[in-house]
Image (cartoon, rainbow, N blue to C red; front, side):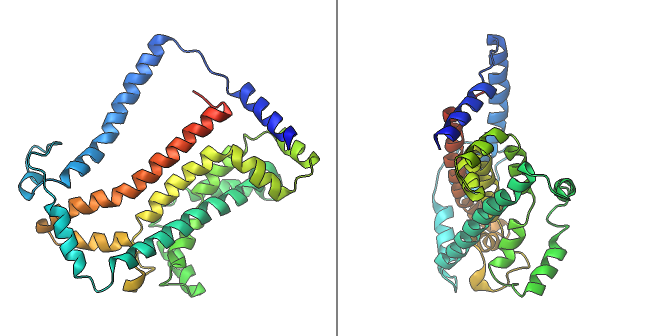
Length: 295
């Protein structure tokens, strides 16, 4: 596989050379990106501080980012409510981990496998399929909810994990993302791998997927956030199969008196997705640095 590594290194050194920019252009980029970064950070800071605010400060107008009298009462109240559950909290966490893990893995794997032949091979109907993938992106999940339910009901998997996982795995966003990234992989590398004796699956897993690491890590972030926040909707109605997000959303539906609990729930639900994003983002940056993809 030395030929593959040599061709890959030459390709990225040639295509992704560093572009020279003026000092003024760099300063403008820093200011603009800094402004949008602070703008995006505002909701996170507000969610963090609200979780530690007493009830009197939550409704203070105008809203403040700082906390004058920090407290943990919101989390204590949340714990008191959880103690009254008929089903242990660990069961809801387990359900969420199963749905999120299988949904994310299936979206990345099946999306990548389906994108590879569309990106690198021409066959009858390939262009039509590519166009249908783009058209499918225009439909929101609310539009496809009824058809999805009918299909899941016909398959007999309503009120199971798969009723939530399969519609997410069958989404076209991952397929569209991976296909557009795989098109950029040079055909010379694939030919070199075939000459080296690699099979199609060997080329896919050892050549294409490593080169597309920024793309599928991005897909992991998007898919994880979607699956982590799912409530099961009409697909799951058994209490022992409900995910964590559904249960926590029910906790905060008790009116104004549970506003503090709602703030604590919002913070807890953000911790895991943000952690996954930070970890994945570091991997994307590392991939770009080692492969020569720089701005």
